Amino acid sequence: MIDIHNHILFGIDDGAQNAEETLAMARAAVAEGITNIIATPHHRIGVYENYGPKIIELTAQVNELIQSHHIPLTVHPSQEIRIYGDLIDDLKNGKALPLMKDAPYVLIEFPSHEVPIYTEQLFTKMALEGYVPVIAHPERNSELQKNPNKLAALIELGALCQVTSGVVVGRLGDYSQSIAEMMMKHKMIHFIASDAHNVSGRNFFMKECFEFIEDHYGSEQADYYKENALKIYAGEDIRYISPVEVQKEERVEKQKAKKKKKFLGLF
Image (cartoon, rainbow, N blue to C red):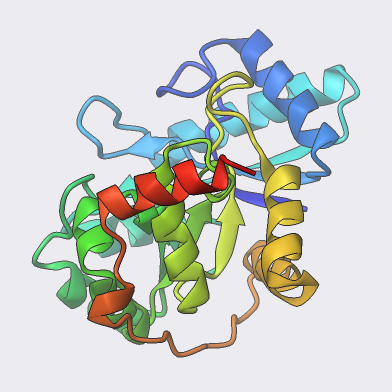
């Protein structure tokens, strides 16, 4: 299994804080069935400026550390990039990194409460340059929660989307879980990833998540998400699937999500 969004590199963002935490995360990943992690520390988020050369060097150190403890896991260097206007230039000069070297996929994070007005223009330019934006955890963005069809429009421009495993299984709130469920049903999600930061509150939950998906949506959909992650790892093309428009009556309100959770809790 491939985890395409992870904060296993130590000492550079709000993920692992030291080598011991990195090792704990590596062991937890292997227990989940993960063989390869794409390390995606925050970049251009304000307090975190983690440029490409720094990430590549630290990833090499982390792989040496993991190998010295005989943990069967390989880590690959990348970033979770907060969207910004000069991104394409930085992808070309190595300050920004794609999810895998020589592959077109780029993990992009939006601010928590908005989708910047220049997003469609940037994504169009990225497509023309051969890059594929992968939107990180859209289910946690308040603008996309209120208007999921805006996400569909970005997918139609060539973007792909990654949902967080912990959200799918209800570890990050009822509302986000309901939004993730809606996005998955409307073919707006292409990857499951952990976004793991540690082995406590922000753990992997990947095995639990795929079991949940198999139970609720079937093994074919679970395999689809796993295969797409493998395609990122291999730098292969991912087949376009048109998203399904969300009708007004299908949209999830916060109060509705809370009532649903309470109802389910009766059984």
